[in-house]
Image (cartoon, rainbow, N blue to C red):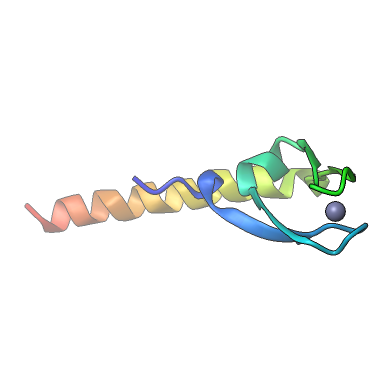
Length: 73
Ligand SMILES: [Zn+2]
């Protein structure tokens, strides 16, 4: 089953502009990530948007999966 929280998003370091990838789960967890240049970036999930998105999208995938299961019968 597809888990959207494992999908990664690109993020630019505000310091060195290097592109990094963080998982959506890390954003939802508001993880503190560290760039290779030493800059720490506090991820923010404003209003729990990502957490909600993960929940909603995972639910959608599950519904879809159930639909496929029904069709396969
Ligand atoms: Zn950096």
